[in-house]
Figure 1 (cartoon, one colour):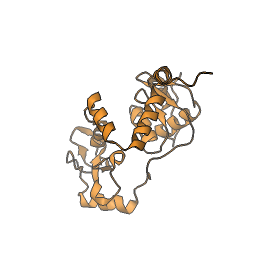
Figure 2 (cartoon, one colour):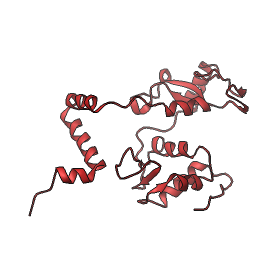
Figure 3 (cartoon, rainbow, N blue to C red):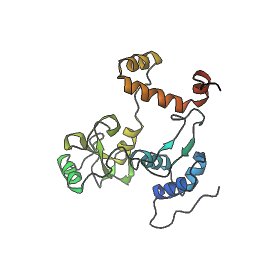
Figure 4 (cartoon, rainbow, N blue to C red):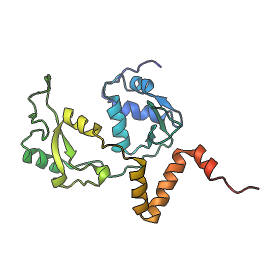
Length: 203
């Protein structure tokens, strides 16, 4: 597809949101999405924001076995945010002041040239010490100032993948209702295997 020209006043996230919503149920590729974003270099980050911040259920190969790496699928238009998106301006100001308007990972100061890229001015964001998806809260004690570079790096950090034995141990320890939810998710991710191993009643 031809690369869309980003209209004035419309960010790449909005362009991607509109593209996903106009292609519900269709598998989209990385190339399509980058073009749809207006050629944004950080289009992948915008997709993560649509998932994690706005709650759009954008599926990848981590969610469905029939999706390949670099393929994305939005099945429903209605977002289902896992938590409240906004941190109040008051809380943001308190965190920035408490942290001295300095990135708590690399030490870059807001407005000054970034130490990793002197051609860019440092922009600070509010980040979570313990990620929201891992039980972290929006309390002041769990918030810190992060520059754009470190904030993106923190999003990309992922723990070592557990072995199947570790997963099995955790599942055995989990309550029965949680085990059922895990089973539902696995059957949804691997529908062919689920049908083969759990056939319906014969007529």
